[in-house]
Each structure stands twice: as C-alpha cells, then as structure tokens.
Image 1 (cartoon, rainbow, N blue to C red):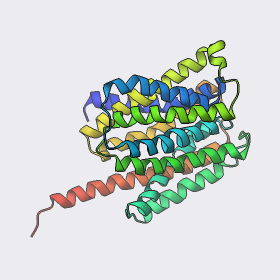
Image 2 (image 1 turned 120 degrees about the vertical axis):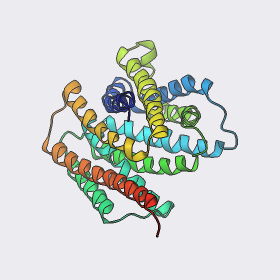
Image 3 (image 1 turned 90 degrees about the vertical axis):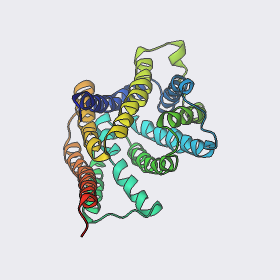
Image 4 (image 1 turned 180 degrees about the vertical axis):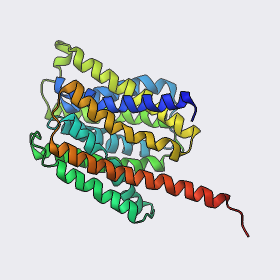
Length: 295
C-alpha cells in the first residue's frame, strides 16, 4: 500500500474507533433511538443527492433498512444506554464470528478448526465480559450482543446487493430506516424533542460526527481501499478499531478498566484476530496455488 493509502486506512480506524465514544455521549444527551434516527436522516440527506435510484433493488434495500438501520443500530445504541462504551467496543467484535457462522449456514461456506477456535475464543471472552459490574441491567448487554447477530444478517443481505454501490445502499437504506427508528422513539422514549427546544452541542455535534465522519467519510475511504487492494491487505487494519475505541473510552470518558474488560476483551480480540488472520493466510495460499505451474 502507498503511504497515502496507509494514512487513509489509519484515519478510517481512528474515525470508527472514536465513534463508540461519540455514540455514548449522543445517547446520554438525548435518547438511544432518537440519536440513531437523527443520524440516519443526516446520512440520507447528505448522500442521496449524489447517488442514483436503485431500480429493481428496492425490496432488498427496504429489508436492509429494517435489519441494519432499525434493528442493528437501534439495539446497539439502546445497549449503550446501560453499558460502558469500552464494553460496547468489545461486544461489537462479535460481528465477525456471527457473519462467518451465517455464511456457513446461508451460503454453505466452509471453514476449519482454526476459525472454529477463533469463534469459541470470541464467545468465551463475551461470556467473561457479561460479569462486568458496571452493566446497569442484563437487557442492555443482551441487546448489544443481539445487535451483532443482526449485523451478521445484514451482511448476508448486503452480499445479495453486490451490484449496488455502497453509497447508494447507505443513502436509501438510511432514508427508509429513519422513519422506522423515529417511530420507535416516539412510542418508547420521552424528552427527545428537548434537543430542539433546548439545543445541546453534545447531541448535535455527536450526531453530525456519526453521520459524516463515521458513516460517510470512513465507509467511503474503506470501500475505496477495498476497491484498490485485496481484502487480505486491508482487513488487518480493522483489528485496530477496538483498540482505538477502548483507549478512547478510557481517556475521554474516564471509564474504569475492570478485570472483566481486560480478560474478556483480550479473549474476544484474540478470537477475532485468529479468524481474520486465518482468512488472510488462506487467501494468500489460494493465490499461491493459482500461480503454481501445472505439470
């Protein structure tokens, strides 16, 4: 990778890592579903004018808007109302194990004992994390884990939309998801309109960051790197995101470092790293085999 593209990858890691802290502040400044709804509205409004209509692909986009926009983002932000941002950063790493498990059952993809070991390690780490004393109630922890299972389902839907550009998917799924999550906010939350009657910089700055920096800039940079380089070259940078997010939660929010976070985080990270490294090694081995001369 060129120095410019390495810098782009590191910027993406930084933007995504900080987003966990940003979302925690935004949720506490308003309400979980309301924060997500405003973020989705901003993404849709800012991106939709620059993309085309996904003709013939509306059913898939609509399904994704519900699964990713309403369910995944709704659950992950609801979880943030009752758990630390550092804890959420660790739980988010379950996205990789859930995705490859769904790939096995939906697309009949196969993998060996190393990735099974990685999956087991990741879930063992989350099991240890469940004992974190700062979790207000189990429902917030369960919601966060469920959000990552839903994220795996969203990846299956996105794979079926591989003929639609990522920005197009982001714009229209955001606009379709926004009314769903805002309706949930109207039915289940209260006091969210205070952000208009008594505007707070925390809420609007955090919503703008999540929409522009995390959803638009970071995803655009990441997709550009995936377009230029093999997955095996780009994917390792993603392993830095939880480290940045965990450190940011400790530094900026003053969250304590507990034994559960340390041991649970190390095991989860090791499991996800094992999964990703194994996938990278397998890709390189398959390329070498393809280049090998036939006899």
